[in-house]
Length: 352
Ligand code: 1HN
Image (tube, rainbow, N blue to C red; front, top):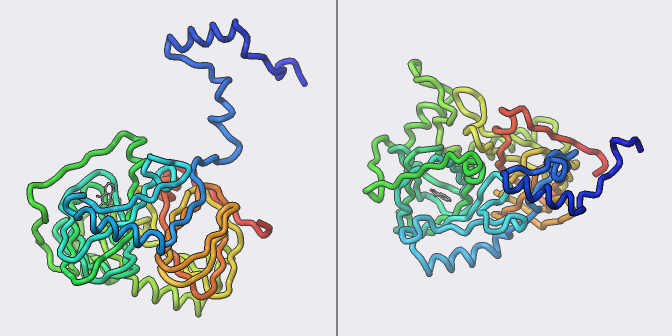
C-alpha cells in the first residue's frame, strides 16, 4: 500500500485533544465521516415493510370509537417505517397514513405547503373539497390536494370511508419550507359544480384561453374505472414489461409531466400467474393493493398480498411481484423530484 493510504490511528490523545478543539470551534474532521457521506450505492435507513389490511382495519375502527374526525383534525394511523421510528415517515422523504371518516363526519378545512394525494380503499361517495370543488371518492380513485390548496373532507353517506394518504412531509421538512393555515369555517364554500375540473381538463381537451400551466395538475380526481379499463385493454393488446407488467403513471393534462412536483403516483397491473423480473430504482416507493392477491419480494422479505394492503420498497432495494390472479397495485414515490435533480436511476436484473 502506498504511504499516502496507510491508515492512521486517530484514537491517540493528540487526536482527541485536536478533535475537542475542533468541536469547540464548530468544526469536524471530514476524514472521520467521508465514507458514510459518499457511499458506492444508496444506503437507506428505511426497511421493507408491510401493513396487511386485516391488521390495520380493526385498529383504525377502534380509533373511530375513541376520537372523532373533528377532534383529531385528521383521524389517521401513520404508517411508520420500522427503520424510521417516530419520524412519521414511510420512506426517508415521504409520509403515508390510513384515514377514516365515519358517516356524518367532517374533517375540517385547512391548507399547508405539503402536498397530499389520496388513494381510496373502501367506501363510496364521500367527498373531499379542494379549492371550492367537491370531488367524489370511490374505491381506487386517486384524489390530489396540491400544495397550499384549501381542503376538507365530508362523509354524507351511510358507510365509512377509508383511504391511504401520501404526503411529502419529510421532504418539505428537510427544506424547512413548511407553512400551514386553518380557516374559521369548518367547511369551505362550494363554488364550482361537481365535475367542473373533469370537464375542463379530463375530456382530452383544455380551454382555448387557459392560463399558464401550474406544476400541479388541474385535475384533482383520477377515477379508478378509467385507469382500470386502460390497464385491462393494455393487458390484452400489448407486450408486458418484464419487471412491471403494465405500469402507467398519472399525467398532468397540460404538460404530460407528473401530476405534482414532489410525488409521482402510478398504477400497475401484474397479470395473473406472472412473476416480474427483479427491479430496483433510487426512489423508495409505497404500494397499495387495489385488487387481487399475490406476493411481493422486497429485499429479503416476502409479503403475501391481499386487497388494501400497503407495503413499502425502500430506495435501491430489489423487488419483484408474483400475481396469483390479476394484481393491481397503486404506487407513489419522490421520483419527480429525483428526475428534476438528475438523480433518478433504475436497474433491471435477470438473476435477482
Ligand atoms: C392532512 O392534511 C391530511 O388533509 C391527512 O386529510 C394527513 C398528515 C400530516 C399533515 C397533514 C388531510 C395529514 C395531513
